Length: 190
Image (cartoon, rainbow, N blue to C red; front, side):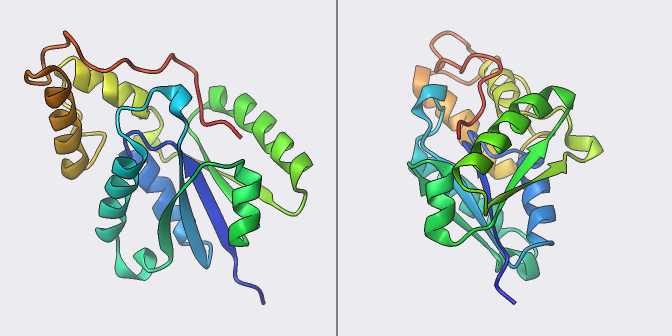
């Protein structure tokens, strides 16, 4: 039987506990899971591509070894369907937090299917404790000096705080010159 390779694509800016929940659960049902980190400059990311890849690799390193060994993190700049073909993936994993995510994800899955009918999209519902977490909210809370530790790992929280402090030369609680956040509702494109 062929190896079941899945891709979990996203911007991961930053990686949250919600992302990690989907990663752990997806790794449990496939032979190999590729976390595909999108360039997606249109979202105005807080972290550069290499930083986001590094943060994810750090989070993956902390996973249970039986799952960790099935997961790899790779950046990509192409169409998701081209990337899937290049790595031999037949599944795209997407997380759904609420009904509001479904319409966008449904449309994207349909477009992807038209481009490559041999790749299926699988939706995993966010666990109850992670349904409200989004990278956008995490950045906004951090930018305004709030505590993001319930939503991200300590390693990610420290990197977010350091990035905001470096961006404006003051502690993260000063929202003065913090980086611009993406507009609400923008999601990772196809």
